[in-house]
Length: 589
Image 1 (spheres, rainbow, N blue to C red):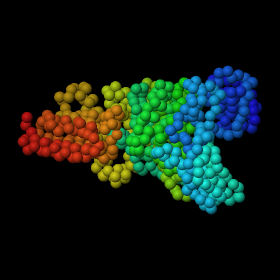
Image 2: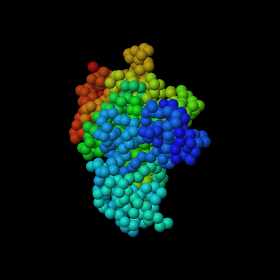
Image 3: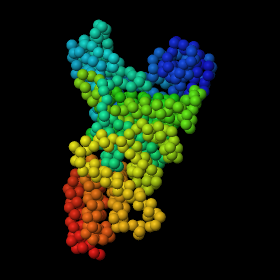
Image 4: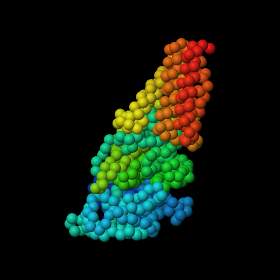
């Protein structure tokens, strides 16, 4: 079915004569067959967002509908790939066309010629339901790709055979209860705006280990949870996301660069292939999918890129893997929504954003979670969603930040003053929060012991007290404080500099295991406790601050992993011994 263009307004095209088309259908516009999607219908008139540059289009140009919604191809070959917002493979396009990409390029997302070694796990006569695994493909050295029965299909295996196949070849024949045969290949297609189905959802009860002390200890994120990383320009959002992508204990990472500057995305594309997966030693790209849709690429495709990325992530989640989706940034995505809404002449909401901004954000974040996947084996998978927010001028009172804060359960507020002071990660411990503390407490108590959460609470208490005391110091000076308050300031400084601050460029400090974090925190809090106990016995504070072991505590985070347990035990013992000696002497200077 075809229609004619009556209006062109940037990426928005209005066409008539499409009475049989549906909202969300993909269309092809003009002789160059530009890809677009129907946003709304009024009679036989359709408003279409075109995912490519529309210059040169004018009234009278033909529009053809494909009759199907915007979908992604899901199968072997996605990992180690770089796609644009509507899943066009950028590496293949570059090989075909060079550095300049024309508008009429059309390449399938998955390579149609590459052969994959299929190993069946089902056999003829097996009764299968949606989500059951029929076989596997070793996609990369890091990930075993599980080929599943697509949702909505079930039946008995008529034939299945091992061998080398392309993604389009039939690898299994399934006969349903009505006697109809279904040919299953290595590839599925799925509409990006529809959630992939699952059995049931669970409350997230295990933390996502990131190796970042300020995150893991103070503001933990659960596997299957949602988090936002808001912050002004230069506060380290991208570095935090790189660290999460590299160190998080997930199986697959989907990184969506939606609307960020081209040079920043170039850094990501150049760095990610060089990063090594700390678990396997292989390149990190072997378990990563990159989606690049920079600020100079079509606005409409930026809006679609979020859905493309999370649909790919849901597919790997359905295999039973732990997946992390990192979106950088949802502010640019919201700006794309605002631009399209304005061109559609919809009633604007706050600051010009559409009234449905909050519900669209919720639709994205609510696709995260820990689920029981479809299939008889009832395997579990998790999808963790982490979105960067780039509020203008760092003002988190703007609509995107506020709508995001109402949805997500972890808020890592980045602070430009910390970043300028070279304190990274620049997560402000006074503004940030995690609502997963209660649901994760049983895990921490079982795995780390009950003291871990007590130490976390004490740390937050000391940092809050420091903020209150700094107000007094600014007004009347530090000399007016009691020794106990001066010790609070000193302990809080140690917590900030020796515990919360991390150097992403130093291998030893870039990642810190849970056990190492717990022991390092324990040393600092033990120092505080021992000093307070000694002061009650009359020891003066300057003497306690002068003990030789203080320097060793400051250098403790730089101890190699294979040595830290012994070194930390030695520091703890030495600290107790030195403070006890001073206490026995009476502590006089």
